[in-house]
Length: 188
Image (cartoon, rainbow, N blue to C red; front, side):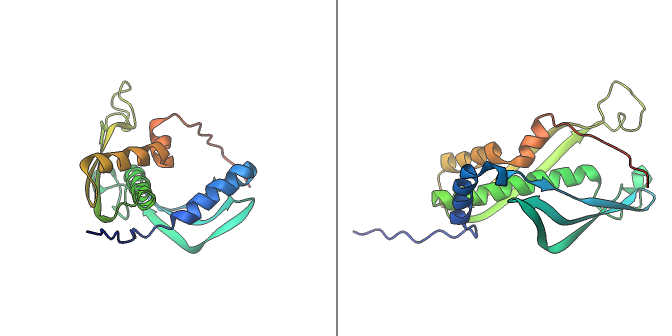
């Protein structure tokens, strides 16, 4: 009996990723990227973020499209609910980065995905950001990501995909490790 293995297609060209890894290891200065967003205040707690350009591979780069995101607070926090809350964008970024990693790693390992769903939630005590209790942290108390993955793989292989995605996720790293943040004001 002959077993035929159908090619796996999760929509990720891992050859491009592997070629980039090899090329950038040979010229590490090209691996230095600067990601950017600009934010313009609309009114109240509403602002609009724009993503257009970034620096990488030794030169300025431009996305194929300009992306805009409305950011606001919910009605309960003096906002008009014109967009996701800033903390929700953190969860969007974390889930998006981990899920992209799962697809890429599955492609590389020859695992066909049928569906991947992540539920990302964070706990936060709002007394901190309201200044009502100076002993309460402003940020999240914890984040939980729960995956439901349907794939041609064993439970152990799926857990290994998720673990490798965590290991390689830039956003997971940003959220779980301290990052220096400099806030400056420039006057024209």
